[in-house]
Image 1: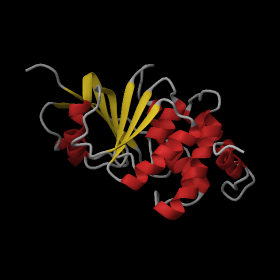
Image 2 (image 1 turned 135 degrees about the vertical axis):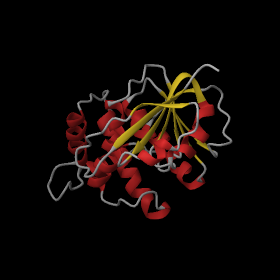
Image 3 (image 1 turned 120 degrees about the horizontal axis):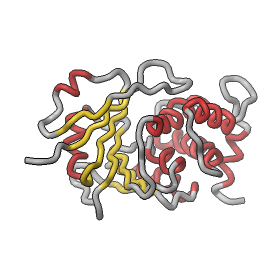
Image 4 (image 1 turned 30 degrees about the vertical axis):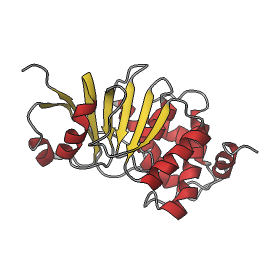
Length: 233
């Protein structure tokens, strides 16, 4: 039995919201509600990711959410919702800074195997989990790096720099703007639109859009703050 197969089977039989619906059905429902289409095999990979999160959570305290069904909505579907508002070209380079347990980077790497995804965090235990997940899920397009965003030196700049819970916008921009390729975007995942943080952004950073996200199964507001670096003198 392969390591890749074990977590998938464990959570295909998990209870979802007290019903008999398996985790993979909950994933399909959430993805359908977002209006997205996943590549073949992605649902099984996402279900296996839930299993790995639940397994490692007991030892490494990766996330405060313990229930597999809630991990689907509040971690996987929430992460994938980025793709409803962001046009990521095939072959693009994306980095998730402060990735923690690999969110949103791992779900994005699963949903977009045509995008090279780097997952960056200074927490060694969390990066150990991300590396394990990349290996077990067979994500050839994903790379985990244990480093601080402020000092990380990539081999090439990125087209998308994203963060889910890294910091306030000014700190995120300070860490992420030097990683940007020309024409690239910084994408911060937020709850309520942070007007005060937007007002405190440094010179040279322009807010392109602040779309609201409708994440099925997640209460409360969700927004993206999409920014770029102004060109010219």
